[in-house]
Length: 119
Image (cartoon, rainbow, N blue to C red; front, side):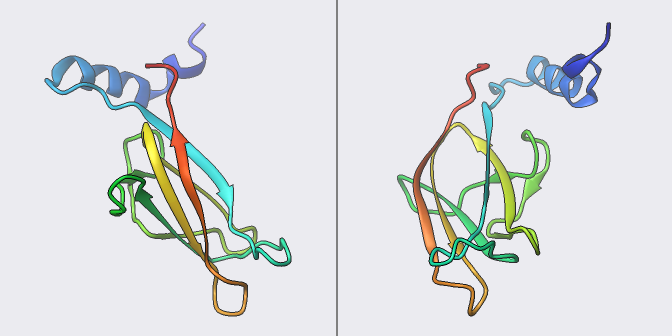
């Protein structure tokens, strides 16, 4: 009966915050990817990932989860797989991935659209 999001304490905390705050609840969406060597396609573990606002080119406020825990920006991808994830308010973002020395050149993922359809 109490399955899914209704059992999650974050769900109830976000509902309480939305009722007690004068500001609207932000719409948070996530992005998951993996850093790679663009020449070989192999994972680039420990690559640096920077997330910037598409319009202003400033570092964006990003989260580790669905909007409750801030994440450093730039941050480091997983050591072996190069996997990474971040969450932010719905909008347009640019990513810059910088692999470690010798693992390939830096590259970018421009104009990523994050959208939360539940709002």
